[in-house]
Image (cartoon, rainbow, N blue to C red):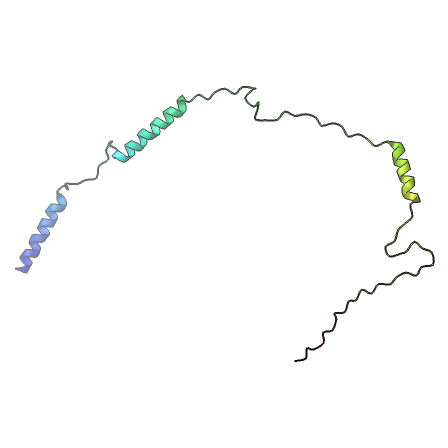
Length: 125
């Protein structure tokens, strides 16, 4: 009995394999709905891009947005007489050294740069 059922199942499998199946993947020209909608939007977008005409640029369009260029004034040169007199005054000026006194015979003051902290006396309790 087992052998007969195996033979029967082999025969049915062979018949099913020989028959064309009900579902066969076929190429068709029908495109799914989502893809057709994307193409529709893309077509509309491309059509509008082709139909767009930008406004022509006029030379006066930049007025009010850009400052006009003006050449700066040339710097004035100093007078030569003033330079010579200022140079003489600088050469005759006495050199001032910090810490020196203007009185003749005065001893220079020595400063002690080392600062000691005052010692605190211990508090009596």
